[in-house]
Image (cartoon, rainbow over all chains, first blue to last red):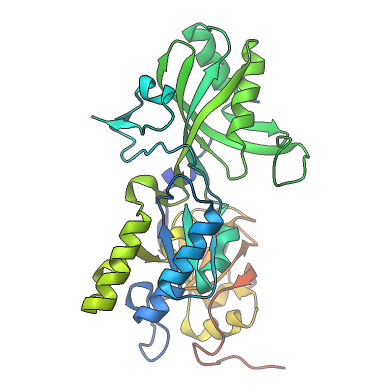
Length: 109
Length: 248
């Protein structure tokens, strides 16, 4: 435990791209991430999924596999079985009364 | 929850280097003064020791985890709404329990929601309905726009890690598992330190492999020769780029 100043937060890190040696890339092979043909795009893709409350991550992944007709899909951990939806964390405020009623979601205003 | 499809599932291990953010409701078992609570929360920012809880999917060895911040968003009575930025593998339930122990009154986690997993934030997430709709648009109208919005290139999920861009001539060797030598590097994101996880990309920005920097970015930028990245995981299929290396 430490009371030192805040440690570096990964999402606040800033990088500067520096050139070591000039390089050119040939259009004859390879493909930029935005330019992949659809099938390639899908099998090299990540979905930022707002997981529904209820089904397990495993089940959700199985549905996605079927929906997208793909073989492998894996999730990298899950959360959110509580059913609170934090649509916008800057404006979202929790309504305590709603919390007592476990079915109701967080409110926005 | 990030879901990686097909080839992209190979990056999951590296997504764990990017940290997470949660919003949690902590319920204190007795009333605690505002100042005292703030003081104790501040004690938990930085490097902490944590033993995974009884019901956990990992070995119950004490682990070190970094907590980037704990912000109090709101408080009412004994309930406190916290926003926690932390390293992957931190158990929030345990963190709140431990905060309760230090406060001397006990506490438990009442609600939890993840608001960020590395570069992916919850406000930009899609529901299963969004995915289904995008698939339907594609099937019925042959419109790719929606599916390309819902499914993002896996490189986006690794944005928080520094990238090292290698020349076309070095790509295939790396695809075969070779380490990246400084001579094969064209550009790099700076600064980063020795042993940090890095993304090796082609000059087109596509991920070739994942690995660890053997030296800091300054050395790699100025070095004349030597190994810059130890490749741990190859992502691109060999043969995508022409083979420009010789065997001895």
